[in-house]
Length: 107
Image (cartoon, rainbow, N blue to C red; front, top):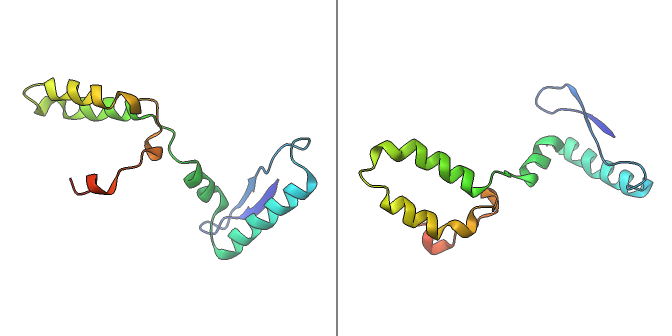
C-alpha cells in the first residue's frame, strides 16, 4: 500500500500496489518509488492509472446510446442498419482501443 497526499486536494489517499504473495518486496518497493516520483512531479497516481486503464465501455453500448439519441431526427433507419452491419466487428471492442486511420480523421 502506498499513501500520498493528492496534489489537487491535499487529502491523503492510499493506492494498493498488490497482494503480498503475488507481489514481491522488490516489486512493491520499485512501484512505490515510481509512485513517489509521480507525486513529486505533481501528478496524481490514481488519475494516471485511470487514464491508462481507459474506458472499458464497448462500442456496441455507445452505438446504441448515440443512435437512440439521434433517432428522432432521421426519416429512415436504413443507413443505421447498414452502418451497424459494417461496425459489427467493433461491437465488443472498448471505445478507447479503437484506432482511427489518419485518412478518416478529415471526415
